[in-house]
Image (spheres, rainbow, N blue to C red):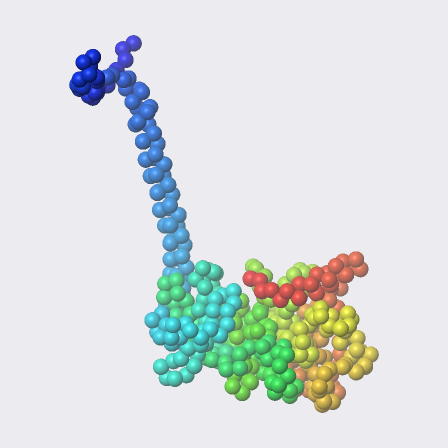
Length: 412
């Protein structure tokens, strides 16, 4: 078999016998297979790997951009085909309002809220949504729901920004912040008596009742808690944060949930236990009941740092006291304020009944809060666990419920 050779020329420096130096032309020959194996093949493999890596990177970037651009296109299409009452702002206008995002009002899993100022001189709260989280559905949901309603006890959406990946919601500014900052404050210098707490509770109840029964579509909030109740200059409460809210027909009493959302400690048990009942507007009633209980007691429902172990979970402890007509001890309140607190607690117990069918509607809750306490009766039953549970599982579920309540973690 003949072997192909490649000849190449080079010069070699040699020393002669006389000590003189001279260059000698040398010809060398190596097989073609050797040259290919040593030089060509490694170069080919390196180039192939680099091209493959580049193509994969380009493909991943393309898919990422396509997915995110489709999100932005969905938002744009939605906004174009729905006549939204709120004003649409550009991102440049948003930056001008917040003056460089200097004054932060709060922060959450959705992003940050900044204080801004309109050209008219009015202050606003601007909620900047984190572009790395969510698919845009929360943004569209919030714009669609709040953009079409107006009520004294529901926060007003003034405008929004949807510019590429940048999304913002512009709300009326609530100077007194969220209810939780005042309700659980240790600063006793704050003038926040039970008459004010009672009026706030009625305002919140009216706001939720409007969402359930006063709109063309039934609006379920699914995240009622102190943090989502904002207070204006006159301490008028307004329900806020509609990121988890859903729209349903008014005549549809039962809703379909594809995913569980809300804050543990305020979420209705039917969101966890399917054998209790179907998810409906009664789930918001339960959350309001847990909120109302905390407003009446001015403490978290679960307090592991209390002096007496029996008072760790306030609803269980206070239910026994009211049923046995014992005096509920509360610090620094008058007899009249005790009556107000007791009425709020009784209404709260009706709201947090385990079976959704046993809970009143929010319209009925408003009536009960405005009723004289003498006309209210405490429910015959109060339980932390489903009626169908066995004795062994009752203790397990109750402990799980109480431990999860302490975390007050939001899930969606």
